[in-house]
Length: 195
Image 1 (cartoon, rainbow, N blue to C red):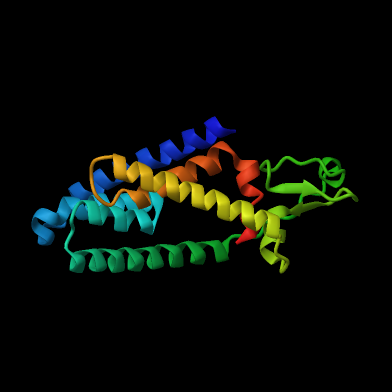
Image 2: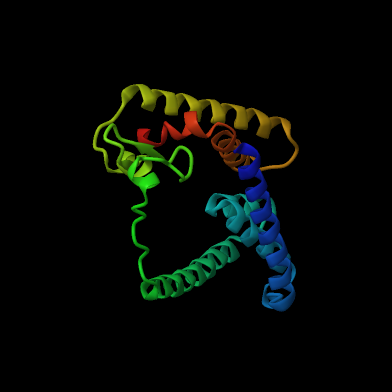
């Protein structure tokens, strides 16, 4: 499953990169002058890896702070409009009926691995939703999560100090975290309810 996750992540990153190149050609952001390509790169990083990547790339490319804020505000506005349209479309779609085939009634799981499990009575339940709804805190899992986070931060700090360039620690933390969650989905996923 790791290879398919990595493949899908790479496909998404390539698609986002190509989309950025097309969008930059169509809407070149000429009013930004020499910082236009930098803003396009930072926005691309945001849509590949999130707001932390946006801030990190903006810092590395030395985009002026007023443009960083304006770019983030414009991006958030466009995302709000995008999701408003998506939610509007979703309201018009009829909800699918539950599958009551003999296989699903017997508790056979055809869903994503690690997301659904069978109860003792054969009913499927969503593990992630159950963890999010839980009010209990597992101290052992919490200490594992804290230890893993500390190790990721320490390794990232070391690598950022060794590698050339400034402001690399946050992108390295992001890269290591995504790698660990992709390479070891079950052990890392088990820590999800710890925070």
